[in-house]
Length: 638
Image (cartoon, helix red, strand yellow):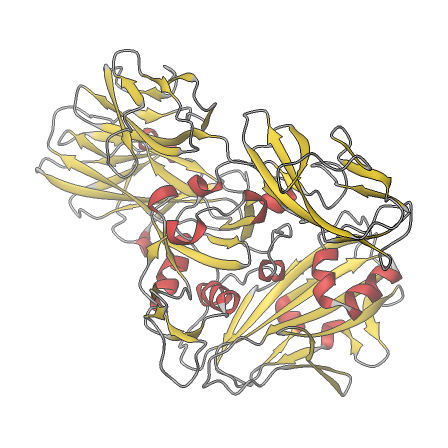
């Protein structure tokens, strides 16, 4: 029903854009009853911005955005389906497909315009009256919400354009780096990330402005890690260049590297002692200067995976199977064995494009000699197996460029060096099956084997292995790697630790391939919903339930690896809980009756311990007195 025509617009200011340019709403056999149009603008701009907002107009009437909560400015309209015309209309603003949005003339203004479909009037009215909450509702388990799409309008007076028809990871990184040195508000991380995405040609979904809620796919963006929706594991190792990552109330852009070597560009403050070193000094204490790319580890250390959403462009990714290749002169080199294409959303690769840069060589396409020396002249084929490089008799270096298409989007170009004039083709080992991250039990022996199927040498050459940390440092003293058995062993330390390991396979030709994974202890359970202070009346019964993981929507504790947990409780002083206060470790609940005339304040420490013997605790402050709650029901746990 909902089609996204264009997910990003970058305008000079005060430009008018029709909704029909953003969305297609085509009639179907099962048209939903209502469509909700919602607008969101975050007021987190620099001192020099005028703060003006855009308006939505139709049928001779206009609607502006108003402050709804914190810095959220919103507007929303409900449209009802007309079966006679197969269109959606509102009595005040007319037909949805005739509406238009007029952008403000304020620098760095970002407005997200979203439409959702529903058959339920109560849901439509809720989304319209509470856009902030409605952003959660559009991705809830509510089956009445049956469609979602959003488009972004960014006002950038200095942008010369045009906005690309689609984004690629390299264009996201390039645009992000272009913001280095600009003045930005230290709270405006979402505006920055969305402006970067918009200028690259792919506006972010509106849900990306909220932390700790599930991410949703939109346009080019697909969610590859969704902590709030149940994704688990070492999300840091998944991060690659061109991705945009929501981490616990912050959003940032990866511009280079991956995993432990990832580098970010965002509006981070750089602090020396108590002094912010990148202040803009423009009269606002909230404004900073965006700094060159910095290590991701500066921001995501200790971030629980439940609070992380990773957005990746749905563009095919080409991987070189070899670092470089030798090719005989006056010969042919098949290209298919040199490259592997994958798609983040699991789509099928439908086309490839190829060109090379050494003008004396040519491409053989289904046996026909073809010249293609630039991206604009690239050869398009349905399968890379139909293409070979036809080399000439001269010794030199050629560069083959390849990209892939998933039926909707093209990926970035990937290059391969070809040394022409050798007598044989030499290939590096191929990473076939990645070793998963390994959890250790403190103070116990461990053994981790790199399986024989992890690497494959395409020439059948013998491979040797070495292991280091991903930063090139030697392994810690308690971890040993045997190049003979290709295995790690040792005794895990008592203190929690994670080691980012790099295993390199090298064949007898001296070419190598490396994989990375984590060997470490399971993290501690974390408090994800602190129990509020309790106030109980004297001479009254009480009950307090502490939801565990998987029990209720607000669990107190969550284990990062999904391990089973057990609960225990003591007073903060170390004493057992009072005799009139009973704690059931199986159900995670307190119950009992307060003694007559008791007036007391004390604290209880509740500890969750996982099966790997790691634990996390929360403290509950309890006051018993005449003004407390007198009821045999569980106090609200928010």
